[in-house]
Image (tube, rainbow, N blue to C red; front, top):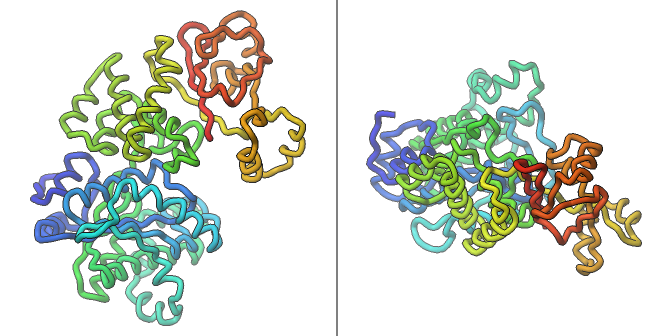
Length: 445
């Protein structure tokens, strides 16, 4: 872009790569140089933890506060009951109030690690849109708010148009989501003087609706700013791993597994991710991204440490690095290791009650296991299964051949029996097939 902003916040957004688009660069820049700007991002409560896909926008809120402005984290206690249809191929499953409240409780802890909710003009606010959405009178809402929306215009937004172009159903319930999100912006402006909504670029249509509604109803100018939708350099959606979503809550993904996700960043993404997900100076991020060979692996360790320290604390980051070095770097492995994250439900429980355990749901099983002593937690998995699950062997037969021929190691020790049972207490593990193929296997709490 050619515009050179004066405000610290917009300078950071541009320099670090957070900015995809803005509804009015000069107007927002002027507002930010004139005083404290309250800005919000909304988070629907579709799971009890946020994931790495949310982290970029959380970092935007963090930089907003660090540059003297007021972040608002808006929990979607109301909008989650409808579900955001943006760029989805089907309707989200509807959640009940109790599940939504439980999810919000699970999400709250992450924000406190990134934002200061104390006192002062720039202190963060955590709000819930159920406060104004739950008790809306439908007829009054249609008359006072609905009349400002053009269906023709709503159908033209890419998030809706792409769904209809594929001839996929869009329910009337989902169609109302963009009206509710626009109303959020209006209410936040009325109640808290909020002047800016931020979100991913897939939220552009929803953000523009809110700006237009606020102008029409309150005759107030507000702004929108979007971040790019990130993919890794190899085309994968950011925040996804082989084991699924990379959660930010430690009880859903251990700090070690979180650290390992960042340690396995591809070479081409190191500098870019350092700018977006750490607070290292931009020059240092560029330096790390330009390293080659063995040095780029050390850069990945720095990236993993800095991101993990923000999310889980510096002690957790240092412990994860120490564990990783002990497990696989001791063996002279200098390449990126594919990582498999197992759950206890992936293992075999050997004990008197194993049949009983097998009849439980996953949640019941995890709760039951948490009551057992260490000696009672007899969870195991055959060595041959580990080599298959990590992709080091294509089948059970191939894994058995690999092991019986002396080509398999676990933690640099030879494995000779394909049926050798590996216990839960032995994780994390480094697996080696032949001389050059390796994988890391971790176990979630």
